Image 1: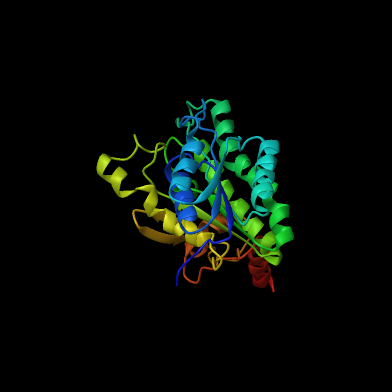
Image 2: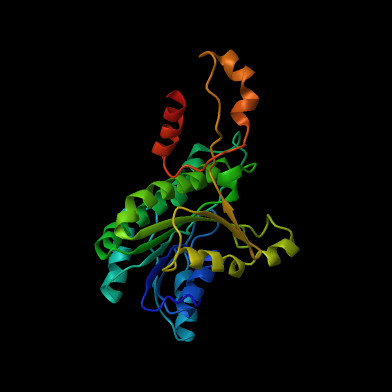
Length: 295
């Protein structure tokens, strides 16, 4: 099976380098028309550059079709204008990859409140802005593929990244709700948790690992998740050529003998026993799993 993006229109945010650039180049190579968005800031979100334009030049030099956009994902009106620009040129938007991000790492004790808020604003609110800007278009055309970018930090935690982890787990939750709301309109929503050597991680990874975790080794998973035959409601980890699936599971738990904390303590091993655990498709399914124990 060959995965093609011929006649598809894609928007990739944070595509001036790293993962976003790898996604944009491969989408274009496979036939997509690509709007390359990047504010061009540094890793902590300051400054500006023409990074998006340089990626567009790479795409067009290879025979592809692309335009650049320097809008900030934190500004909803700018994201609406970005979507309208793509539609004015190509009439539709089929794919949105929410990839833009920043880092302002500190231990929680040393983290300034404004640094917590800024990281959440860029990752979580920025992705919500972009998705909201394109949502009605995808509903109207009865087709859409949206990819959120989470992280192992959001799923499992990482020292010094409370702001980043909160934003990234929030994105997984956003995707899980949007997959339910978009299903009847042909919109599929997935989440990728990449491990990649990029500008954002160049002083975190050892040199050998940095090379092994090239962004190009994440792109195959990302592109599959926005392809025509993509699944939906998946959280996929990808890095170094390895692709994994992550799930939010629920144990069978225990019906308390008495409504007391002592009962919780006494039945703790039964509560955390993973035998027969399930993966609810929605919050209401979790509620039903409780109600079934009460009958």
